[in-house]
Amino acid sequence: MGKDISRRDFIKAAGAGALALGTAAACKPGSGRRSDPAAGISEGMPLRTNPNTGDKVSILGYGCMRWQMIQGPDGRQIVDQDSVNELVDYALANGVNYFDTSPVYLQGQSEAAAGIALSRHPRNSYYLATKLSNQSGDPSFERSVQMYRDSFKNLQTDYIDYYLIHIVRDGNDWRRRAVDNGMMDFLVREREAGCIRNLGLSVHPSRSGFDEVMTYHEKYHFDFCQIQMNYVDWYDGDAEYLYNELDKRGIPVVIMEPLLGGRLSSVPKVVADQFKEREPDASVASWAFRFCGSKPRVLTALSGMTYMEHLQDNLKTFLNFKPLTDEEMDFLKEAAGLIKNYPLIDCTNCQYCMPCPYGIDIPTIFKHYNSCVNDGYIAQSTDQKDFKKLKKIYLTTYDKAIETVRQADHCISCNQCSPHCPQHIRIPQELRRIDQYVESLKQETL
Image (cartoon, rainbow, N blue to C red):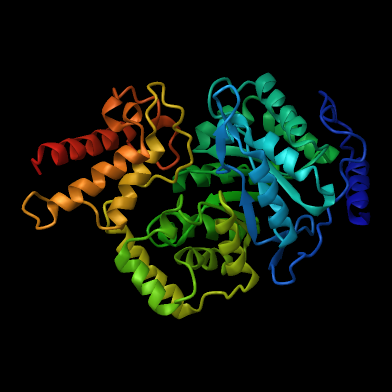
């Protein structure tokens, strides 16, 4: 706590008295106190030190965007709070201390669910991360500040450890949502007041867009940056470039999509067999997490663990963490090449395309298609010996996974979804392709 007091004294001495415009309105006196989470209840959880604050952060972080939803009394989908509480308790008991949420996750319910679950524990036993998710609709100062203040209420806290500008796509997007509306100046004052302990951003840009946003680092001092990083995007994408640029600037890295929306936990069989040959007792997903954990600038790697078995498998990886060797890195580079050769849709199940105004279950349609590709259940032509079998498997599982009224054939190509996709998927075109494949199966015209 002493370090934090000296930091605040320094800020006062430096004349940071411009806490005007209501900067401290969302936090209580003393909110600048430091968190001091236990060094992992389980001794095996690796902790990374944040050089800005000295935080000891678990290298496995909890992404709160994929918790279970159940039908509520009024028929609407609500978060299964009992399941969330159980998962949060188990994670904390095993050394996970970083929890990442957003005002828009889980149909707007994630922050409140996280607040309920975590507020049952001492506030200094975990780090909270949430976001300014003003990428849709009105990004005005007034609306953005209200979203920021609502996060404190939802999370039942008077300070936020890690606060991010959400889904920054390029320089124009950054300026519109964070600079021109005055929000970054406001958030910097909130950081000075202690309401925010670390201020950063979550990026989904091209290299040029990223470089443009990074020119603002000198002015605002980004305390951390969240990027999409996994071994596929490293060897066939921009992840290596983004990581290295952040590393050069000394900016801690938070990883999102280490499993590429779950795709790297269910890889094509030919790749999965190679993983199992090397590590028979390890899950396919463990390789992706070991990749992220082997990079020293990584502060934490987020995983959206829906079920207890996901959490337990990831804990198994990190409580017995082994950095990848150079030879294993080379092996993952080959695996990444094989994975990219399969005709998968690059959907990470982030749900940003939802809800569809016509009720189409876009992420589940893509997930079902990708699973069938990985499992070898895609028919190539009616001449195949097992065509009838493949046809039956695909159509039966398609109807089981997605309600008829929510299937791809109901897409009218309004394209309200594509602008929200961080992976830049041309969603209507992909839905049309899947629908045409389904029809060709039914009519046997492949």
